[in-house]
Image (cartoon, rainbow, N blue to C red):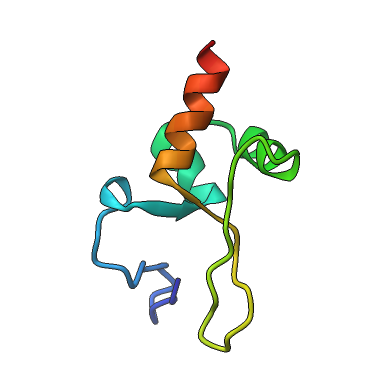
Length: 79
């Protein structure tokens, strides 16, 4: 996220966070109102499917999770 001259972080993506099809792990925690550490541990244990899209340099970027993967993981936790 770029920082403006006033020191405020602005998201360069015009799509609202709740309407996106994938998020970084901290963003997913905000959208689904879950604890970030729980999501991070689920991803580390491979209970939650994540992917790493390439960044502008062509290297793997930050871990992302799709809406479908979050829905599947939440349903498995409810069982």
